[in-house]
Image (tube, rainbow, N blue to C red):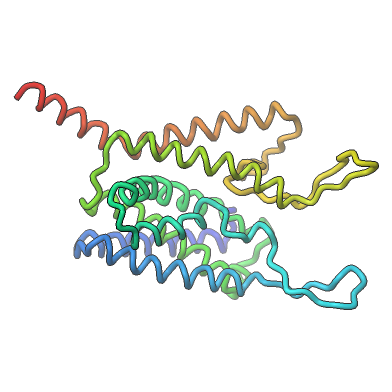
Length: 262
């Protein structure tokens, strides 16, 4: 995090993100067209990511080789799940459900992808500038997340989604269900070791939705540490998403007041 390669990528993300959002604000294309472009971007992104991180790994006895995709690359992070959301929002004919999904995407795309850009899981302290630019994966990672930030913001400013306070509740509900499900997935994809039927260790666990461990390297060594951490991320989610919905809370309150005085 904040290595030279990361800082350069931050600058690229800022310029490309601001440029793309300015273009959308100026030209005001239909949200459907923007979602169509996003669908293409999602497919290309997932193809590039998958083919760039695939590995040929030998079997334990060394007699065979296996094509393998490490578990943490599965599309079960919040930003990866947005792929399904984008396709649903683009092609669904159910207006109410589509509106709920778009309202969910608005803050979660913008906040989630921004945090991913600021804290890239693909970089370590030893990642060199060459590694940051001579591999396909960083291009996919950063450009995909820039697309999500821009898309999330444009959903709000396009004027095509009737954002209401109820969407804050539905967004928090969907996010809570997905986050809770991630606890199951993180356990499913871990590598446990049992001795005489007793669990003695766990290795190589995934960290979908960051519910397994803190992204800043903060050690969680006791169960109560995890509960404190869970409380922190729940509070952050409630507050940050609430701030994104604040303009719509204010708008709804004004409309209610005007209707009462009419």
